[in-house]
Image 1 (cartoon, rainbow, N blue to C red):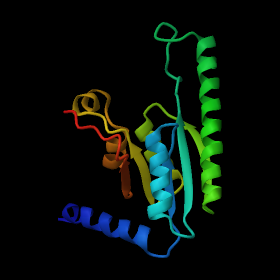
Image 2: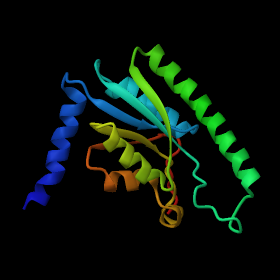
Image 3: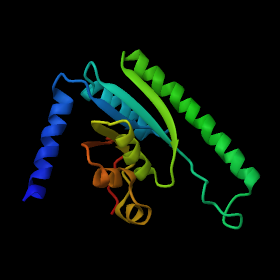
Length: 175
């Protein structure tokens, strides 16, 4: 069946995206974690090819559906949104500096979304990304079951190759 060939097709597309000298659009979701930093560094040192364009995206905290009785006051929500914008600006400055130091063409965007994984997948479609490279926090099985894993959800729902970078010093062995 066609579905049986899908993993093979994705693997071939992944190899073409990484190793052939064609321009590729790479989406790298970023935040302020060491996992994100490791992922960006891994991309730069191991995967980047001249001509690739890196779109780094930060998914900001979303307060759109918070009801009056459910959470913070409107004033506190404004404070939290301002803190998130400041955090995003710091991440943007850092990421663009790292890309510039490595002569990589790239852009940064802060987007808002209820589900981080869904926002990443939708943004990858918007920019017509060829590949998503993202970090993984390496949560234990129980925590991952309760909270869900952004990287696993992106991998499951994306229609383009996804590379998940696990930080070698932060992988979890807890089950």
